[in-house]
Amino acid sequence: MTTRREFLRLMGYSAAAAATLTLWPGITRAATGSDTRFLVLMLRGGLDGLHALPPYGDPGYAQLRGPLALSPAGPTAETAAALKLDGTFALHPALTFAQQLYQCGQLLPIPAAAPPYWGRSHFEAQDCVENGTATPDGAQTGWLNRAIAALPGAEGLAVSTVMPLMMRGAVPVATWTPPLPVRVNPILLQRLEPLYAEDPRLAPAFADALASQGDGAAMPDTMAASMPGAMPLAMDGKTLRGKAKAMGSGGRLPQLMQAAGTFMAKAEGPRIGFVEDYGWDTHANQAAILMRKLKELDNALSSFAQAAQPVWARTALVVVTEFGRTARINGTNGTDHGTGSVMFVAGGAVAGGRVGGQWPGMRPGQLYQDRDIHATTDFRAVFKGLLAGHMGVSESALATRVFPGSAALQPQGGLLRVARAA
Image (cartoon, rainbow, N blue to C red; front, side, top):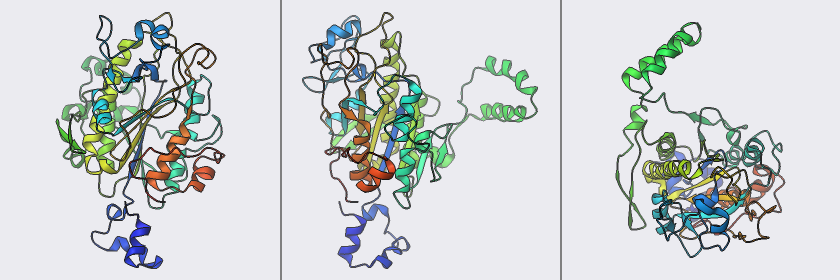
Protein backbone atom coordinates (compact mmCIF):
# COMPACT_ATOMS: atom_id res chain seq x y z
CA MET A 1 0.00 0.00 0.00
CA THR A 2 1.42 3.38 -1.00
CA THR A 3 1.70 5.79 1.90
CA ARG A 4 1.18 9.53 1.70
CA ARG A 5 4.93 10.09 2.08
CA GLU A 6 5.75 7.62 -0.69
CA PHE A 7 3.07 9.14 -2.91
CA LEU A 8 4.61 12.60 -2.56
CA ARG A 9 8.10 11.29 -3.21
CA LEU A 10 7.02 9.41 -6.34
CA MET A 11 5.15 12.42 -7.65
CA GLY A 12 8.03 14.79 -6.90
CA TYR A 13 6.16 16.97 -4.44
CA SER A 14 8.07 19.03 -1.90
CA ALA A 15 7.19 19.18 1.79
CA ALA A 16 5.58 22.56 1.17
CA ALA A 17 3.42 21.13 -1.57
CA ALA A 18 2.29 18.38 0.76
CA ALA A 19 0.39 20.90 2.85
CA THR A 20 -1.81 21.79 -0.13
CA LEU A 21 -2.85 18.29 -1.08
CA THR A 22 -6.27 18.63 0.48
CA LEU A 23 -7.02 21.47 -1.95
CA TRP A 24 -6.86 19.12 -4.92
CA PRO A 25 -10.09 17.34 -5.87
CA GLY A 26 -9.85 13.59 -5.41
CA ILE A 27 -6.61 13.75 -3.40
CA THR A 28 -7.94 12.51 -0.07
CA ARG A 29 -6.68 10.32 2.74
CA ALA A 30 -8.04 7.31 0.88
CA ALA A 31 -5.93 8.20 -2.14
CA THR A 32 -2.77 8.70 -0.11
CA GLY A 33 -2.93 5.45 1.83
CA SER A 34 -3.59 6.87 5.28
CA ASP A 35 -7.36 6.42 5.36
CA THR A 36 -7.32 3.52 7.79
CA ARG A 37 -9.77 2.94 10.66
CA PHE A 38 -9.21 1.51 14.13
CA LEU A 39 -11.91 0.66 16.69
CA VAL A 40 -11.67 -0.63 20.26
CA LEU A 41 -14.65 -2.49 21.76
CA MET A 42 -14.36 -2.79 25.56
CA LEU A 43 -16.43 -5.52 27.26
CA ARG A 44 -16.69 -4.53 30.92
CA GLY A 45 -17.11 -7.17 33.60
CA GLY A 46 -14.54 -9.76 32.60
CA LEU A 47 -15.37 -11.94 29.59
CA ASP A 48 -14.68 -15.63 30.16
CA GLY A 49 -12.23 -16.34 27.36
CA LEU A 50 -12.58 -20.08 27.91
CA HIS A 51 -16.27 -19.82 27.07
CA ALA A 52 -15.93 -17.51 24.07
CA LEU A 53 -12.94 -19.41 22.67
CA PRO A 54 -13.10 -22.90 24.23
CA PRO A 55 -9.77 -24.79 24.02
CA TYR A 56 -11.59 -28.09 23.59
CA GLY A 57 -8.39 -29.84 22.48
CA ASP A 58 -6.54 -29.11 25.73
CA PRO A 59 -6.43 -32.22 27.94
CA GLY A 60 -7.29 -30.22 31.06
CA TYR A 61 -10.20 -28.24 29.66
CA ALA A 62 -13.16 -30.60 30.00
CA GLN A 63 -12.14 -31.74 33.48
CA LEU A 64 -11.87 -28.20 34.85
CA ARG A 65 -14.94 -26.88 33.08
CA GLY A 66 -17.37 -29.69 33.76
CA PRO A 67 -20.90 -28.77 32.58
CA LEU A 68 -19.62 -25.50 31.06
CA ALA A 69 -17.26 -27.32 28.68
CA LEU A 70 -17.99 -26.78 24.97
CA SER A 71 -16.89 -28.96 22.09
CA PRO A 72 -17.41 -29.30 18.34
CA ALA A 73 -18.45 -32.87 19.13
CA GLY A 74 -21.77 -31.58 20.50
CA PRO A 75 -24.54 -30.84 20.71
CA THR A 76 -25.38 -32.54 23.95
CA ALA A 77 -28.44 -32.22 26.12
CA GLU A 78 -26.78 -29.29 27.91
CA THR A 79 -24.80 -27.47 25.22
CA ALA A 80 -24.82 -26.72 21.51
CA ALA A 81 -21.87 -27.67 19.34
CA ALA A 82 -18.95 -25.26 19.40
CA LEU A 83 -17.71 -23.89 16.06
CA LYS A 84 -14.40 -25.60 15.31
CA LEU A 85 -11.44 -23.44 14.28
CA ASP A 86 -8.54 -25.88 14.53
CA GLY A 87 -7.45 -28.91 16.51
CA THR A 88 -7.34 -27.00 19.80
CA PHE A 89 -9.77 -24.08 19.65
CA ALA A 90 -13.38 -23.45 18.74
CA LEU A 91 -15.75 -20.50 18.95
CA HIS A 92 -18.83 -20.39 21.14
CA PRO A 93 -21.87 -21.57 19.13
CA ALA A 94 -23.41 -18.07 19.24
CA LEU A 95 -20.47 -16.55 17.32
CA THR A 96 -21.61 -17.58 13.85
CA PHE A 97 -20.70 -14.33 12.07
CA ALA A 98 -17.33 -14.32 13.82
CA GLN A 99 -16.74 -17.80 12.44
CA GLN A 100 -17.44 -16.51 8.92
CA LEU A 101 -14.90 -13.75 9.45
CA TYR A 102 -12.40 -16.35 10.61
CA GLN A 103 -13.05 -18.50 7.55
CA CYS A 104 -12.32 -15.61 5.18
CA GLY A 105 -9.18 -14.64 7.11
CA GLN A 106 -10.54 -11.56 8.87
CA LEU A 107 -10.73 -12.70 12.51
CA LEU A 108 -7.72 -13.36 14.73
CA PRO A 109 -8.49 -14.67 18.23
CA ILE A 110 -5.65 -14.23 20.73
CA PRO A 111 -6.12 -16.37 23.87
CA ALA A 112 -4.35 -15.98 27.22
CA ALA A 113 -4.20 -12.17 26.88
CA ALA A 114 -4.28 -9.65 29.74
CA PRO A 115 -3.20 -6.14 30.72
CA PRO A 116 -0.05 -5.75 32.89
CA TYR A 117 -2.25 -5.65 36.01
CA TRP A 118 -2.99 -9.22 37.14
CA GLY A 119 -5.19 -8.38 40.11
CA ARG A 120 -8.90 -9.13 40.29
CA SER A 121 -10.49 -5.71 40.82
CA HIS A 122 -12.77 -4.68 37.97
CA PHE A 123 -12.03 -0.99 38.43
CA GLU A 124 -8.27 -1.29 38.74
CA ALA A 125 -8.04 -3.69 35.80
CA GLN A 126 -10.18 -1.45 33.59
CA ASP A 127 -8.10 1.59 34.52
CA CYS A 128 -4.95 -0.29 33.56
CA VAL A 129 -6.41 -1.35 30.21
CA GLU A 130 -7.51 2.20 29.48
CA ASN A 131 -4.60 4.31 30.70
CA GLY A 132 -2.04 2.24 28.79
CA THR A 133 0.52 1.95 31.57
CA ALA A 134 1.70 -0.93 33.74
CA THR A 135 -0.42 0.08 36.75
CA PRO A 136 -4.03 1.14 37.41
CA ASP A 137 -2.96 4.64 38.51
CA GLY A 138 -0.16 5.11 35.98
CA ALA A 139 -1.88 7.90 34.00
CA GLN A 140 -4.94 10.12 34.17
CA THR A 141 -5.45 10.12 30.40
CA GLY A 142 -6.14 7.32 27.93
CA TRP A 143 -3.78 5.68 25.47
CA LEU A 144 -6.32 5.96 22.65
CA ASN A 145 -6.49 9.74 23.09
CA ARG A 146 -2.70 9.90 23.11
CA ALA A 147 -2.65 7.82 19.93
CA ILE A 148 -4.94 10.33 18.23
CA ALA A 149 -2.55 13.08 19.32
CA ALA A 150 0.26 11.23 17.54
CA LEU A 151 -1.71 11.25 14.26
CA PRO A 152 -1.98 14.84 13.00
CA GLY A 153 -5.45 15.56 11.67
CA ALA A 154 -7.00 12.35 12.99
CA GLU A 155 -10.31 12.52 14.81
CA GLY A 156 -11.75 10.25 17.50
CA LEU A 157 -15.24 9.06 18.38
CA ALA A 158 -16.46 7.56 21.67
CA VAL A 159 -19.83 5.81 21.46
CA SER A 160 -20.46 6.11 25.16
CA THR A 161 -22.70 7.95 27.61
CA VAL A 162 -19.71 9.30 29.55
CA MET A 163 -16.28 9.93 28.08
CA PRO A 164 -14.31 6.76 28.92
CA LEU A 165 -10.84 6.98 30.41
CA MET A 166 -9.36 5.44 27.26
CA MET A 167 -10.49 8.47 25.26
CA ARG A 168 -9.75 11.20 27.81
CA GLY A 169 -6.87 13.55 27.15
CA ALA A 170 -5.68 16.68 25.40
CA VAL A 171 -7.32 15.93 22.05
CA PRO A 172 -11.04 16.73 21.81
CA VAL A 173 -13.06 13.60 21.01
CA ALA A 174 -16.64 13.47 19.75
CA THR A 175 -19.20 11.39 21.65
CA TRP A 176 -22.49 9.85 20.59
CA THR A 177 -25.11 7.90 22.52
CA PRO A 178 -28.40 6.48 21.25
CA PRO A 179 -31.64 8.21 22.16
CA LEU A 180 -34.12 6.74 24.62
CA PRO A 181 -35.25 3.34 23.28
CA VAL A 182 -38.43 3.36 21.22
CA ARG A 183 -40.27 0.95 23.48
CA VAL A 184 -40.29 1.99 27.12
CA ASN A 185 -42.84 0.36 29.38
CA PRO A 186 -45.69 2.91 29.68
CA ILE A 187 -46.37 1.79 33.26
CA LEU A 188 -42.76 2.65 34.16
CA LEU A 189 -43.15 6.08 32.55
CA GLN A 190 -46.40 6.63 34.42
CA ARG A 191 -44.73 5.89 37.74
CA LEU A 192 -41.70 8.07 36.98
CA GLU A 193 -43.69 11.10 35.84
CA PRO A 194 -44.76 12.37 39.31
CA LEU A 195 -41.18 11.97 40.59
CA TYR A 196 -39.73 14.10 37.80
CA ALA A 197 -42.61 16.60 37.98
CA GLU A 198 -41.45 17.66 41.44
CA ASP A 199 -38.06 18.80 40.13
CA PRO A 200 -38.14 22.04 38.12
CA ARG A 201 -34.88 21.18 36.34
CA LEU A 202 -35.63 17.56 35.46
CA ALA A 203 -39.32 17.94 34.60
CA PRO A 204 -38.72 19.61 31.17
CA ALA A 205 -36.15 16.96 30.21
CA PHE A 206 -38.56 14.19 31.16
CA ALA A 207 -41.32 15.86 29.14
CA ASP A 208 -39.01 15.99 26.11
CA ALA A 209 -38.25 12.29 26.55
CA LEU A 210 -41.96 11.51 26.67
CA ALA A 211 -42.50 13.54 23.52
CA SER A 212 -39.79 11.60 21.73
CA GLN A 213 -41.63 8.38 22.61
CA GLY A 214 -44.55 9.51 20.55
CA ASP A 215 -42.38 10.17 17.53
CA GLY A 216 -40.25 7.05 18.01
CA ALA A 217 -36.65 7.63 18.99
CA ALA A 218 -34.40 7.30 16.03
CA MET A 219 -31.04 8.22 14.60
CA PRO A 220 -30.66 11.43 12.63
CA ASP A 221 -32.04 11.02 9.10
CA THR A 222 -28.60 11.30 7.50
CA MET A 223 -27.36 8.46 9.63
CA ALA A 224 -30.39 6.19 9.38
CA ALA A 225 -30.49 6.51 5.61
CA SER A 226 -27.09 4.87 5.28
CA MET A 227 -27.91 1.83 7.43
CA PRO A 228 -28.82 -1.25 5.39
CA GLY A 229 -30.95 -4.14 6.50
CA ALA A 230 -30.12 -7.79 5.99
CA MET A 231 -27.79 -8.18 3.02
CA PRO A 232 -24.75 -10.15 1.92
CA LEU A 233 -21.26 -8.86 2.65
CA ALA A 234 -18.70 -9.51 -0.07
CA MET A 235 -15.29 -10.04 1.52
CA ASP A 236 -12.32 -11.46 -0.38
CA GLY A 237 -14.56 -13.11 -2.91
CA LYS A 238 -16.68 -14.82 -0.27
CA THR A 239 -20.22 -13.90 0.65
CA LEU A 240 -21.00 -13.49 4.32
CA ARG A 241 -24.53 -13.27 5.59
CA GLY A 242 -24.76 -10.31 7.92
CA LYS A 243 -27.58 -8.28 9.36
CA ALA A 244 -27.42 -4.71 10.56
CA LYS A 245 -29.67 -4.36 13.59
CA ALA A 246 -32.23 -1.57 13.65
CA MET A 247 -32.22 0.87 16.53
CA GLY A 248 -34.02 -0.54 19.52
CA SER A 249 -33.76 -4.19 18.42
CA GLY A 250 -31.24 -6.95 18.94
CA GLY A 251 -29.79 -5.46 22.09
CA ARG A 252 -27.92 -2.28 22.79
CA LEU A 253 -24.46 -3.32 21.61
CA PRO A 254 -25.39 -3.93 17.94
CA GLN A 255 -26.90 -0.46 17.66
CA LEU A 256 -23.81 1.12 19.25
CA MET A 257 -21.52 -0.71 16.84
CA GLN A 258 -23.75 0.14 13.91
CA ALA A 259 -23.53 3.80 14.86
CA ALA A 260 -19.74 3.62 15.16
CA GLY A 261 -19.47 1.98 11.75
CA THR A 262 -21.74 4.56 10.14
CA PHE A 263 -19.76 7.51 11.47
CA MET A 264 -16.38 5.94 10.73
CA ALA A 265 -17.37 4.98 7.17
CA LYS A 266 -17.86 8.59 6.15
CA ALA A 267 -15.25 9.96 3.73
CA GLU A 268 -13.69 12.20 6.34
CA GLY A 269 -15.04 10.35 9.37
CA PRO A 270 -13.20 9.63 12.61
CA ARG A 271 -10.28 7.27 12.13
CA ILE A 272 -10.26 6.02 15.71
CA GLY A 273 -13.32 4.88 17.64
CA PHE A 274 -14.31 3.40 20.98
CA VAL A 275 -17.41 1.44 22.02
CA GLU A 276 -18.13 -0.11 25.43
CA ASP A 277 -20.55 -2.73 26.70
CA TYR A 278 -21.47 -3.99 30.16
CA GLY A 279 -22.80 -7.18 31.73
CA TRP A 280 -19.90 -9.63 31.28
CA ASP A 281 -19.44 -10.50 34.98
CA THR A 282 -20.75 -14.09 35.17
CA HIS A 283 -20.47 -15.46 38.71
CA ALA A 284 -23.61 -17.61 38.30
CA ASN A 285 -25.69 -19.18 35.52
CA GLN A 286 -22.92 -18.36 33.07
CA ALA A 287 -24.01 -20.55 30.16
CA ALA A 288 -27.37 -18.82 29.72
CA ILE A 289 -25.98 -15.33 30.23
CA LEU A 290 -23.13 -15.76 27.77
CA MET A 291 -25.34 -17.42 25.18
CA ARG A 292 -27.29 -14.16 25.09
CA LYS A 293 -24.34 -11.80 25.44
CA LEU A 294 -22.14 -13.55 22.88
CA LYS A 295 -24.99 -13.58 20.39
CA GLU A 296 -25.33 -9.85 20.98
CA LEU A 297 -21.58 -9.47 20.41
CA ASP A 298 -21.83 -11.48 17.19
CA ASN A 299 -24.71 -9.29 15.98
CA ALA A 300 -22.64 -6.24 16.91
CA LEU A 301 -19.71 -7.39 14.76
CA SER A 302 -22.11 -7.99 11.89
CA SER A 303 -23.76 -4.59 12.35
CA PHE A 304 -20.41 -2.80 12.41
CA ALA A 305 -19.18 -4.66 9.32
CA GLN A 306 -22.36 -3.71 7.46
CA ALA A 307 -22.22 -0.05 8.40
CA ALA A 308 -18.44 0.24 7.85
CA GLN A 309 -18.44 -1.66 4.56
CA PRO A 310 -17.04 1.28 2.51
CA VAL A 311 -13.90 1.27 4.70
CA TRP A 312 -13.96 -2.35 5.91
CA ALA A 313 -10.91 -3.33 3.87
CA ARG A 314 -8.96 -0.61 5.68
CA THR A 315 -10.35 -1.35 9.14
CA ALA A 316 -9.00 -3.16 12.20
CA LEU A 317 -11.03 -3.55 15.37
CA VAL A 318 -10.03 -5.17 18.63
CA VAL A 319 -12.35 -6.62 21.28
CA VAL A 320 -10.93 -6.57 24.82
CA THR A 321 -12.04 -7.08 28.40
CA GLU A 322 -10.33 -6.26 31.69
CA PHE A 323 -9.54 -9.83 32.78
CA GLY A 324 -10.59 -13.45 32.33
CA ARG A 325 -12.30 -15.91 34.65
CA THR A 326 -11.20 -18.83 36.77
CA ALA A 327 -10.39 -22.07 34.95
CA ARG A 328 -12.61 -24.03 37.32
CA ILE A 329 -16.31 -23.34 37.62
CA ASN A 330 -17.80 -22.38 40.97
CA GLY A 331 -20.75 -23.82 42.87
CA THR A 332 -23.33 -21.74 41.01
CA ASN A 333 -22.32 -22.78 37.48
CA GLY A 334 -20.39 -19.58 36.99
CA THR A 335 -16.79 -18.42 37.17
CA ASP A 336 -14.98 -15.89 39.32
CA HIS A 337 -12.45 -13.18 38.52
CA GLY A 338 -9.34 -14.50 36.83
CA THR A 339 -6.38 -13.40 34.71
CA GLY A 340 -5.87 -14.43 31.08
CA SER A 341 -8.84 -13.90 28.74
CA VAL A 342 -9.15 -13.54 24.97
CA MET A 343 -8.74 -10.67 22.52
CA PHE A 344 -10.43 -10.71 19.13
CA VAL A 345 -8.82 -8.72 16.31
CA ALA A 346 -11.07 -8.39 13.26
CA GLY A 347 -11.45 -6.42 10.05
CA GLY A 348 -10.54 -6.40 6.39
CA ALA A 349 -7.00 -5.30 7.20
CA VAL A 350 -6.38 -8.17 9.63
CA ALA A 351 -4.30 -11.28 8.92
CA GLY A 352 -6.77 -13.69 10.48
CA GLY A 353 -7.97 -17.20 9.85
CA ARG A 354 -5.73 -18.55 12.61
CA VAL A 355 -5.43 -18.43 16.38
CA GLY A 356 -2.64 -16.15 17.56
CA GLY A 357 -0.69 -15.78 20.76
CA GLN A 358 0.82 -18.56 22.84
CA TRP A 359 -1.44 -21.03 24.64
CA PRO A 360 -0.10 -21.83 28.16
CA GLY A 361 -2.22 -24.93 28.73
CA MET A 362 -4.64 -26.03 31.45
CA ARG A 363 -2.90 -29.07 32.89
CA PRO A 364 -1.83 -29.19 36.57
CA GLY A 365 1.01 -26.75 37.11
CA GLN A 366 0.16 -24.63 34.05
CA LEU A 367 -2.42 -22.40 35.70
CA TYR A 368 -1.55 -19.06 37.25
CA GLN A 369 -1.86 -19.40 41.04
CA ASP A 370 -3.48 -22.80 40.35
CA ARG A 371 -6.73 -21.10 39.30
CA ASP A 372 -6.40 -18.84 36.24
CA ILE A 373 -5.22 -19.01 32.65
CA HIS A 374 -1.61 -17.79 32.70
CA ALA A 375 -1.43 -14.69 30.49
CA THR A 376 1.16 -14.91 27.70
CA THR A 377 0.16 -11.82 25.67
CA ASP A 378 0.29 -8.27 26.99
CA PHE A 379 -2.62 -6.23 25.59
CA ARG A 380 -0.24 -3.36 24.90
CA ALA A 381 1.87 -5.42 22.48
CA VAL A 382 -1.22 -6.01 20.34
CA PHE A 383 -2.32 -2.37 20.58
CA LYS A 384 1.18 -1.24 19.63
CA GLY A 385 1.32 -3.61 16.68
CA LEU A 386 -1.99 -2.32 15.32
CA LEU A 387 -1.22 1.35 15.90
CA ALA A 388 2.22 1.06 14.32
CA GLY A 389 1.43 -1.19 11.37
CA HIS A 390 -2.13 -0.08 10.62
CA MET A 391 -2.37 3.54 11.75
CA GLY A 392 1.22 4.63 11.21
CA VAL A 393 2.07 5.75 14.75
CA SER A 394 5.85 5.72 15.18
CA GLU A 395 7.37 3.19 17.54
CA SER A 396 9.12 5.96 19.46
CA ALA A 397 5.79 7.69 20.10
CA LEU A 398 4.24 4.39 21.14
CA ALA A 399 7.02 3.64 23.63
CA THR A 400 7.19 7.07 25.24
CA ARG A 401 3.86 8.85 24.82
CA VAL A 402 1.09 6.43 23.93
CA PHE A 403 2.27 3.63 26.25
CA PRO A 404 4.83 5.34 28.49
CA GLY A 405 7.49 3.10 29.97
CA SER A 406 6.87 0.32 27.45
CA ALA A 407 10.07 0.54 25.40
CA ALA A 408 11.02 -3.04 26.30
CA LEU A 409 7.67 -4.35 25.01
CA GLN A 410 7.87 -4.89 21.27
CA PRO A 411 4.82 -4.32 19.05
CA GLN A 412 3.30 -7.64 18.11
CA GLY A 413 3.86 -8.44 14.47
CA GLY A 414 1.87 -10.49 12.00
CA LEU A 415 -1.46 -8.88 12.87
CA LEU A 416 -2.07 -7.23 9.51
CA ARG A 417 -2.28 -8.30 5.93
CA VAL A 418 -0.18 -5.38 4.76
CA ALA A 419 1.47 -3.17 7.34
CA ARG A 420 1.68 0.47 6.26
CA ALA A 421 4.71 2.65 6.79
CA ALA A 422 4.68 5.35 9.44
